[in-house]
Length: 202
Image (cartoon, rainbow, N blue to C red; front, side, top):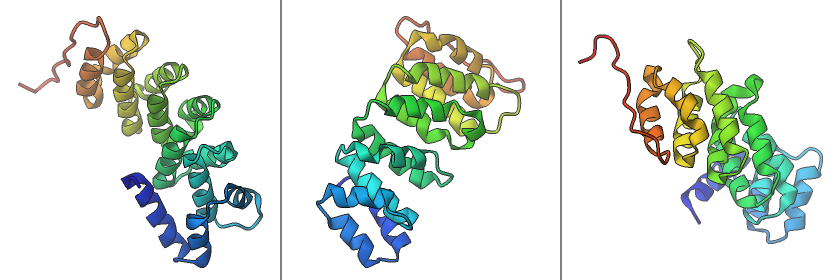
């Protein structure tokens, strides 16, 4: 069992208060029983997350909708767990859903994990979505620095030449400049860039 899986299960165990229902859902080998939790009314959030997480790791696509909702949750640990499960689910809809969440300006505060998921998937939707999201983060006084950095790092990892213009724009932003230099250096054929000097620095 990996560290992320242990972390998710321990968090959900604590949320459940160590209930018998948690023990049953964590131990069952019946996918249908887990899937039922996703549709039964009155189930607590931790139980739905546990069922979706376990189904996702097993590649059961009945978890898709629930995991996408959790990917856009206001609680970062839920987003991280959902992203981990979605990356292993193998559902062809995942990249499109992650791209929609990453580029939704009304939910940009929760875009960090959709961005990271797109990079992990390396799907065709990834580069255009990250370019769009990063371009918006280059506006003056944008507060979503972590999202912007995730886009810069991700575009470097993906190494697609289409990202060169927006990464060159990012060089002018002190909080992103060093990451942009490193990202540009990972794009094949790109001449090594250097971060612009900030006035007052030596």
